[in-house]
Image (cartoon, rainbow over all chains, first blue to last red; front, side):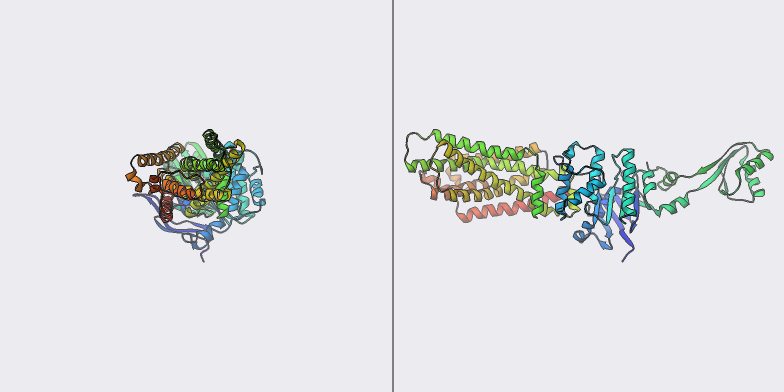
Length: 307
Length: 267
């Protein structure tokens, strides 16, 4: 059996001639949070819909718990909780009444399931407020409650922080983290907000124009982040020569006539600056630079960035 | 399946259609019994008074149920079928998983139960008003109650074509309501045309609603105290087999089409 809880193999969805998702291969490991990151329209929702069998793939395969989803829906789907796109509930019913309908269909006759799910997302049990009177944030919380109500092993959450206020986002983040760390859930979460994914996910998949561009753990990605010291000097060639001869390093990059980037972080900036000045160079700028995840994603996605 | 059907009823909570159904099933029998009472005259014979009760009952079936109930059930069906589309809840059901065919079966079961409920309410209130207004002698209750039950099933099946159109057009509630009324008007129009030109009598029983109406009339006639029908009227009555075949074809064809259309727009 595969090590992955969720796995796609060359998953493709075409609408007419246009590929919404193309040859996608994602791998979600057990007990980890996988963040599917991509801009709006990148194919995140289509991918998630295919994972849940809501959309039939044009080609390729989805495997969950080691089995193909197609033909095994009855076995696999009850072990998954999901939130896809906007929260869908009956507006004329209260939160409890809404959850009751779905709980019964899932065979959960005990109302404690509903009570516990609502408590988890800080919504009142047996409240008289109708779903139509809920704010977007409350609706989103209710959708999360529905996703976790039956205590699934896997959660597939499409943009779960949509509509939440900053405090709600932080709460949701720690709630999702807790589900993974304490309860051992495997979570696939999609977002177009880079900061959210970087704060939450253990593994990241970057999707753009329906294609998976990168799939790595956050730790690996962070290791790839470049740190360097940027100097703005009167002559970058002379500065390069000094770095080679005095500091015995070749890990630098001349950007232009006045700018040079030193990749080696162990060298003392103050000594380098003093050396440059003593050798007749004018140093107008010297600072530590870090290529952020966003810069990295911009690079990966061809310069368009994420959010 | 029972949970699915119960869910369909739960989804209608706080919707005005349910009190509307009860209100209509209360008002229409009142109207029918009142008009029957108005035409009573001075005859107080048992046969005549039984005949008045039969008249109220047949008027209830003929006008209240044959023409009004398909409208009502059409509106109810549009609410039930559009609910998942309008509230984006279909995905929540699919991931349980609930299949389209089971969902359709649950929705139609709910429509059927409401259909029977409405029919029985009509009968109950009609009997009650007959007693209150002293508009005839109440008799043969068991048969009429059982027949109302069967009629409720029949009229729900006869309403299925309009539900097929509602799903096919997949438009607003207004369009669905108009479609339901159009279906009722169509039945009326066919009936009117046949009344003018009796040579067309054979086509009338191809229409499920009219076929059911005529079949019911035939069944009722055997039980009625008062039998004053023109000989031409007997031409209208379909055989039992014909009625079952027409309703059977309506049921099967409608279910297949519904499944096809509903799957198409929920895909």
